[in-house]
Image (cartoon, rainbow, N blue to C red):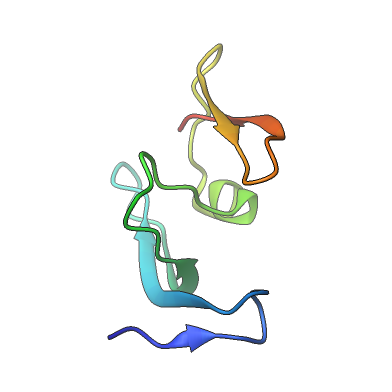
Length: 78
C-alpha cells in the first residue's frame, strides 16, 4: 500500500514518488511526488515538470477539470 503524505496534502493522500521523462529528449526528473487517484481520467503533472522537461504544450487542446466544490479550470495538454 502506498504511503500517505500528510505534510503536502490536506487531507492526507496516497503518494507515489515517480520519475518523469520526456520521451523525445530523454530529459528526466526523479522522485516527483504524485498523488494517486485510481478514479482519475487523466494524469496531471506539475507545471514545473512541463518547464523542466521541455515538454511541448499542444496549442488549442486542454482538459476541463471539475473540482470537488464544482469549480472548473482548464489544464493544458502536453
